[in-house]
Amino acid sequence: MSIISTVTDINNTFLSRREITCDFAGLAGKLKKIEAIDMITKEFKLEGKTVIPMRLRTHVGKPTVTGVFYIYEDENLAKKHVNPTIFSRLEKTKAKQQEDEAKEGEGSETKKGTEVEANTEEKNEEKSE
Image (cartoon, rainbow, N blue to C red; front, side):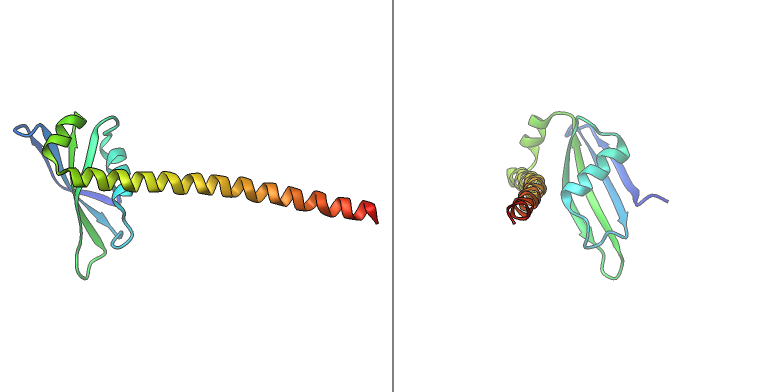
């Protein structure tokens, strides 16, 4: 059983976009917009297309999240149709996520480096005694 179930999948030719409404089972309170974009992209094979999460709504008393996504072929057309605030929020979230990943990468390298330095200092102290 898949976590994602499609409620509606409409091809809106007037606005040149695809509108998908999906239910995410068991992810209430845990699902983030960036993660939802990744899941939708993999589920519907939308590589290279612009996926915009318009709404993620949780249901009272149920562990279900309903998401509305717009899929555009052209990013410039998406920027004309969709409120620019949505794009700025998505870009801010992506930048923060990349910054956190970079800090984690540096943290693990720094931790390894300090461990090596501490071990060499201990060995030098033992030799001097």
